[in-house]
Amino acid sequence: MAKKRYLGILFIVASAFFFALMNLFVKLAGDLPTMQKAFFRNLVAAGVAFALLIVRPSQFKTIKGNLYPLFMRSAAGTLGIILNFTAIDSMDIADASILNKLSPFFSIIFSFFLLREKPAKFEWLAVLVAFAGAVFVVRPSMSAEVLPAVGGVLGGMSAGLAYTFVRKAGEGGASRNLIVFFFSVFSCLVILPFMIVQYKHMTWAQTGYLLAAGAAAAGGQIFITRAYTYAPAKEISVFDYSIVIFAAVLGGIFLGERPVALSFAGYAIVIAGAAINWIYHMVKEKRVSRECAAKGEMLGTQTAGMASGGHGGSSHDDGGGLCDGTADSGGVGRSGADSGDHGDDTGDKGDGGLNGQV
Image (cartoon, rainbow, N blue to C red; front, side, top):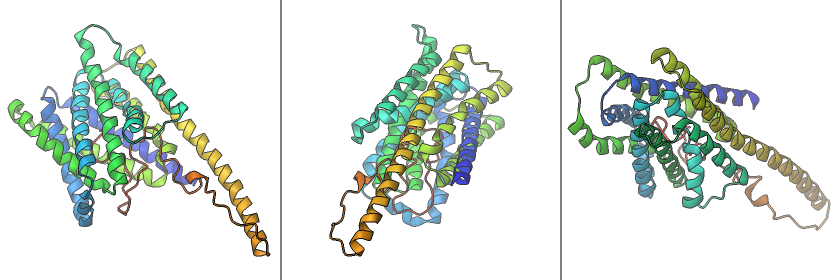
């Protein structure tokens, strides 16, 4: 079990590295319109997702009954990726990355209102801590220079909403690959008219950077999918925040970026919020495991007594789902990584698909 967890951590850190690469390539593409960058990046994702669907065509059937959550997930995700790319173009990529990683905390809020899930007090504390850290990165002021950072926060909020509908679609039986494909095609169709109007001629280098961004995002999703096949999100998703370290290093080496001290303080506080949530779920899991072990011993004793002629009856208390694995599907951010595929045995339990960080 420990070995699988370590492999999960290794793969999720690798995923974070590839997503940091995606952010780097998006910025290296230069002064191209945001819509153009988003279109070509999602076009690659659509192609990869379609290839995965063709392998198991039965996944297309899982669209039945899931059009509403798929549409809402795609609309929110499209807005999120546009805002995220806008932030990347105007900010240090480490700053933009940490603001996008507010999405799990927004997802906790949206899950409360849309999925009627009641977060624990520690989860609310994690949300407050993370938002406090975001203030250090955004550094609010009356200047227009703050707008990209505000856009980054709103991008994280949109991604959080998208992840909430990923969970809803997953609970409805939608294949993860279908969710990815639907989003990618939807976003390309929505962005296409804007890209045509704003289109700017690309050099071969810029074209290469955008294709590399799409490939890096695909690599990131492959690794995060692999990670969640080895360990549940609540055990390893906190390590996804290593993207900030990779983004800071890559930005420093290739872009000459040097985040200010307040940004580093903000990174630490946001990650602390994620750590609070992670620790809460790990402690809760251990407590539930002990309770279930004790209950198992008690039921075993009762069963033995009945077998020897006792008439003590049987217990109907199943712990409200605590001992059958249904009580807690959360992790850092309820990002959809725990929802599984509900009948689709592709093994894809990623964070919402080949859509980068959104």
